[in-house]
Image 1: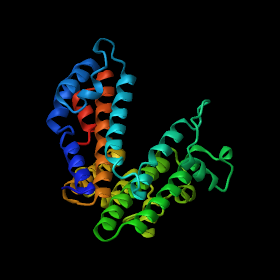
Image 2 (image 1 turned 90 degrees about the horizontal axis):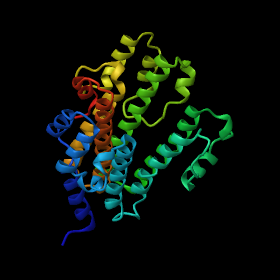
Image 3 (image 1 turned 45 degrees about the vertical axis):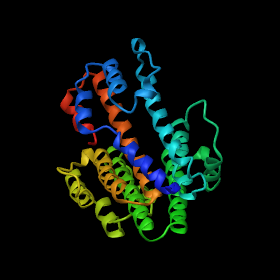
Image 4 (image 1 turned 60 degrees about the vertical axis):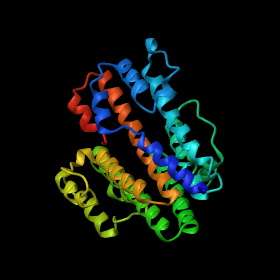
Length: 303
């Protein structure tokens, strides 16, 4: 008889096995409109059940996006129900609460703050209303990552600890690099301010590397300093740093979802790969809706 861990691992790997392959993405790219995309997903993919009640005569793009995201949430819950007592998995899933809160933070009708968000906001030294969006985002995620890594250290050991640290610290490092690029060259933020909003939980982004990056005067210079962090990506370009970051996460997660026997590692990798699949589909839907060239849409996909 299988243990709970073995059952969950089998389920996760089976669900991963049903995820879209490159061949299927290319077939979806040949669709002429959103209606054809929905018909393809209904007839050929694991989204069949989630899309079965969607009337094809009246397909709204936003409705499709909501269904895809709900599908992803349902998949998370299928596995998480086996491990509700897991402190690591419980904290991992709190990231969605932060993301949802930030997405609505400055709207007139704000969502209710969960206990997690209230706790994190209470830890901020300044009044929430006096902080800008970037500072609130940094403070919330900094507290979240700190708690997550601390929980991983306390509740895992040996190979599991190594795997989770590698995955999480790589993710944090990639977030930092994307943030540096945006703030340095897109909104021209002072170096001192950029440095104050760097998450201090990196894999390879040490003080020396960080200083070289922050002192880069031009995009080509910054690109050169970034390359050591993107060795797994062919033809890295600084303008595509967000896409390249997703590719790094995709490569590492695909590796561990196949070789790891730790449920927390495999669950985390599944969440990453599922999120990337949803992002890919949303990019195709948006691209085809706005009649973008197929090759351009394809270049944006993580496959």
